[in-house]
Length: 393
Image (cartoon, rainbow, N blue to C red; front, side):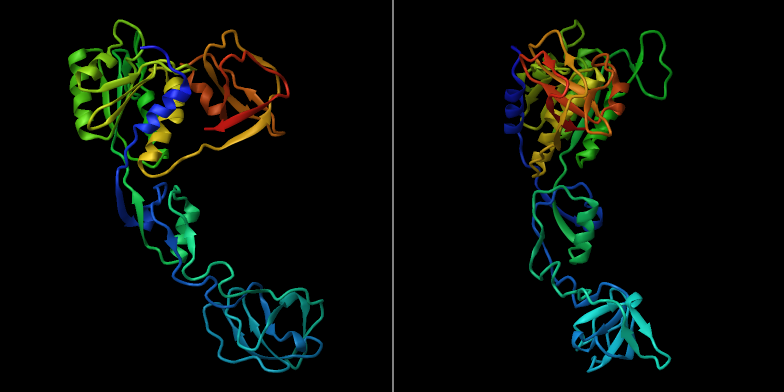
């Protein structure tokens, strides 16, 4: 198959999406899930006029004279007495403002006399009252559907009594690594072996996207063994991620095995660097990605193609955060026949510079990168000071 532009690959992937359905879960278990119905408040917030400072609740018209303190109101206790003329109530932050009072003067702006009365000594500037419903009105939509639920969202749901939340079902995701050279991380490699890092990286990326992937292990470079594990993964999952075995070597037979398993291969190469040997196909039961064996390539292609698909399957049209910043130094490359995806860091004074990067196997470069900059097709150089778009990772 011919190499296709990244934009075409992205369009194909996103158009292959299907919705995994919805489910209702406790709001305490909804972190990173995708909200598919609006959250509506069942109360006003604040639910009553409350003091925003420690001080004295009183009438503005009485502030020129001495005031009798008639009550102390802590947070959580309803006022027992209305404030009358030349009266006030001592009040704590968060407590309900009593009837008759229209301001709260701060305790540090008050002088207390031996009689127990008080007087404002500072200047009156504002009410210091959080008024009923000024933050949220009863019946108001406080969280709109289509967002990934954050810790802040969970606090809002608790505030408005939304204890059951409807979210998109997580797609079932299988993660497989292919290659005779691979061993698990707890094994010390010998001879030509290397530790399998791709699977654990992909699992973590999928979890960050709000899913719970299943690891199917390492499959050796054997067509029958590969066919067996791939068919099982397709039968049991919505999305199958295979890393390795998709390049052009004699033992890179994953695409052929996928076709034997009933997967319709749509593309096998994408015009990006790193990540050109990315395979994508669809099966009546699942969507399948064959990702490159080099870890930087698989990381980048997950972020560019797989993560948007996962989010769309759950009802979330995810847009990565990008910021425009100037290059700290000149950067150039020899060939411009593909989009170059450059791992970069951001300086404290707001400049971008490429991290030391030796190629798609250099996984230790990524922890020092805060984002990726895409150098377009046909562009060989970014000049010092040139503005570039940094996609955060």
